[in-house]
Amino acid sequence: MLDVRGLEAAYGAGRVLHGVDIAVGAGAFVTLMGRNGMGKTTTIRSIMGLVRPSGGEIRLDGRVITGQPPERIARAGVGLVPEGRMVFPTLTVRENLVATSRGTRWTLDRVYGLFPRLAERHAQFAGTLSGGEQQMLAIGRALMTNPRLLILDEATEGLAPLIRAEIWRCIALLKAEGLSILAIDKNLAPLKRLGDRHFILEKGRTVWQGTTSDLDADPAIAHRYLGV
View 1 (tube, rainbow, N blue to C red):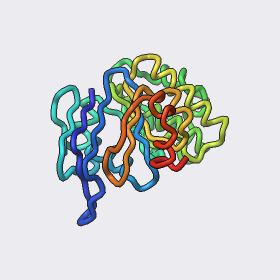
View 2: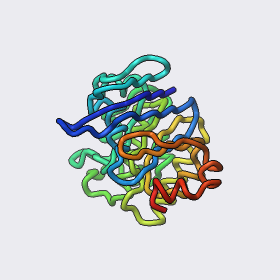
View 3: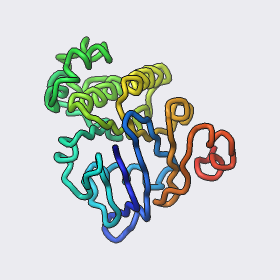
View 4: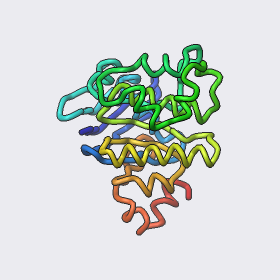
């Protein structure tokens, strides 16, 4: 579904990505791993059109989307849950959700079924929600675009353990439904448990890829590239 080849990107004169390769198959859960500052979020932002690549190619279902604006990429079926949640604080929960609604698979009722807390707080301003509730809202908002590929950038960062567990439970349900997912997260255990394939970045390049079994079979990989 998603094929990224030789992706390069920069902020001004500072190059960040020097050759990133990622592939996400239909219905697959793929992870992007690496220490902080290795280019993971820039890769996501480049895929979404928030950063214009300076080289390489991004294809979605075989069609080149490199450098297209974010709204076109979203309409093509890519939903983003950004780092930092970025909900609309002065809109209610319901307004946040309907603002991105397109298609019929994911509806308000279905999002509320996945995250009952959002149903309870449907009339509450998003800026007054807890961090965990805002994260649920960010995921629900992305689902309301009815994506075929969901990208999660640090979806459990800074959350209490019980809330993290709830978020991962819901992500596992999305995987079981066959939704394609590309995820970044500092919590390696759920990534390894759910991930079908992992890609590791080091200084803006893809330096390793493989399955959880491959990763577990060579502890030196995690020690060298992930700091664990």
